[in-house]
Image (cartoon, rainbow, N blue to C red; front, side):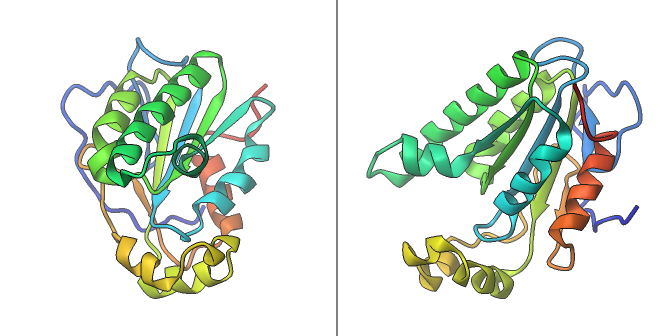
Length: 206
């Protein structure tokens, strides 16, 4: 198995680990959301870093019941509010709510989005601590120049250009409560999907 570079952060006290998880993955609480067999994958990082491509490739590898929850759908399609910061906060509430409901229904869940620390650190920590099953978190950190290059080949490049990508770029922003995996520009989509499936303990779940 090819390991990705990892930014280490100590988990907060009180986290219950029922078995030794892969780096970037942890098992959550005995009560709360989902079941001991549900799996939650969070793909976060700057725009145009490869998150949606990875999520789309990963989904069919996990089985018949997988919910893909995209931040862009909530932020760009579902909600209309000229106040960008308020819209981002409101989207975080809806996204985590949808993830909880899907896990409770027995779906594996893939969350795909920028998911900045300001709006998502606290709500993701709560979701992680409540999730009974396995949670894996991957942050894409491919660098500004590579992000700009990848964005130029996307359909969204017609909606906003390089100047916005540079303005929005955050770079590496590790969660303070989770030892997430860092995904660098050297890792291909196929390699990353294989790693995630292995981290989750295997692919298809009926």
